Every structure is written in structure tokens, then in C-alpha cells.
Image (cartoon, rainbow, N blue to C red; front, side):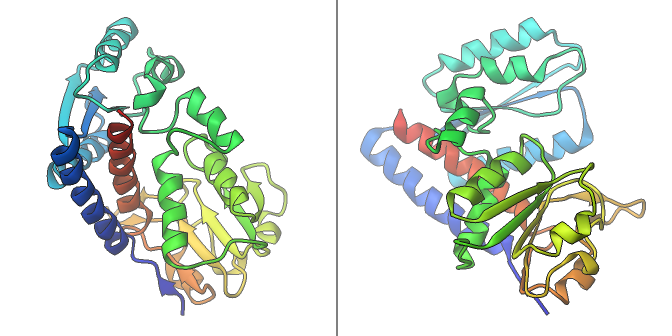
Length: 281
């Protein structure tokens, strides 16, 4: 039976260190890390995520500002708000909660954020810099995944890693981070032929597709490390991952749970990125 990688526990340890670093930064430089979170409309999932981020700021001692805008806010109005936050010295990180209403271009909004305040790590500058190996910010979920692997003392060098999912938010950046740690990386997606044959080769299997229980036991190599990024709500209200946990855990050496695995690490890495932005300031 696999060892469960306790994301909640690791995230708490990281948050304690961030809190201590923030206290030192305030004492030595007079700087309090500041995060601005912008939410358009009333998407229930986005509401939950924003509350968690604001709560994390409060617990760590960061300044947080929440901007709630109606769903019919124009693209121009949103860009104007971002321009103001770009020049606000008390704000070191800007996060625009996705998804945005259909009449607003997410690419245009992300590009409007100053790359030095892009704590989500989605700006084209940071995406390109990640490809070359020197980003200002790494996207929070991929960074959290790598932190879980590192703190579990899993050596990636020479290992075969398979990422199921090719999004710009998780799949592509985490593949680059794995490659930087000398893993051999394959990305699978909806058009991959015989996907089970590919996943069964994986020493490290990362599932990030948003399909409940897609990864079953027969898709898992004996002794594999499984990182489950998926968060899916079933009809009965239960939260589950992309991995069929019980059956996959019987074959794996390590596995992350849902909830309590990657999710808490994403918030912790957002706080870490914001702290680093404030230190650069």
C-alpha cells in the first residue's frame, strides 16, 4: 500500500516558514507583502478559491486586498484596475481569478499584469522564462507538485515521468520542471493512442485532466509515485481526484490524496511567490 503524501502537513510547514520570513522582512525593510485578488462575477468555485487565498494572507500576516467586480465589467475597466495595481507600491502580487467571463480575453488580462507582480506565473514573460530555466515566478500548482516530490525525497534524475494533461496552468509547466530535474518526460492528452501503455511506464505519474477516477490500477506501474492534481465533485457532493485512489494506492509507492494533497500546496506556493515578489521590491 502506498505512502500517502500529506500535502496539508507540508503546506503548513512551508506557511510557518513564510510567516517567519514575512516578520523578518517587515522588521528589516519595513515591507509587508501585499496581494491583490480580483474576482469577476459569482462563480461558486472561484468564490471558494478566493476566500482561501484571502484567509491564507491573513494567517501569514500579508496585506490582502479583494476586488469583487460584477460579471458584466468591461475588459477596459479590468485593464484599468490592473494598471492601477501595477503602480501600487503596497501590492507585490496581482491575481486575477480564472475563469473570466466570455467577453473578456484571459490572455489580454494576464499580459496586462506586470511580470514582476505575476505571482500566478501565467504571464508570457514568465512562461517563456520558465522554458529557458529562469522564471521570475513558477505557476503555483506545478511549483507545489515539485515541492511535494522534493520533500518526500523522491529522486527524479533518470526516472520516467508521465504527465496526463497538457494545460498551460499545470501540464506544460510541470513537464518543464520535471525535465529540469533530469527526468525523461512524456505528456499524454485526449488524443494519445493507448494511453494505458504510456502511463504504465511511468515512475512518476501526474494526473491533471479533470476527469474523476480516470487513472485506474491497470494504468499504474508497480511502485510508481502518483501525484493527483484533479479536483472533481461527484453528484453526491464528494470531492475526488483524477485517480481511483484505493485501487491505484495498492500498486503505487507514494500517492497524494484528494482533498489534502496538491490543493493546499497551490495556496502555499502563491504565498511564497508573493513573499519573493516583496523581497525583490
